[in-house]
Length: 106
Image (cartoon, rainbow, N blue to C red; front, side, top):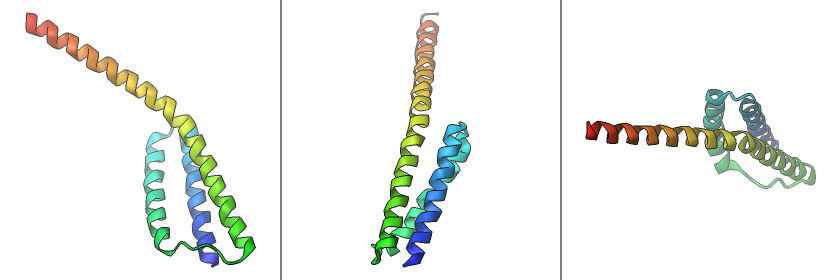
């Protein structure tokens, strides 16, 4: 039973590192950690159980709450960055359309 708590602690450590990477705008590191997180979740899923003792259940619930808080923090950093990236890409597409239209007339 303690193994599942160790699994969740490991996963929580990864989400914490993801949060820190997002806060530091270390996007490549965030992507690497996200891949590790996905692999960890896939490994945990088949053996995930509800702990039978109250202490372990509380630990697991606390870890899940912490990971959800990390996820919320990560999104608070990545969403503005994604919006900025989207604006840059839209601007580049608009510029490309103008250039194409100009070249077609020339």
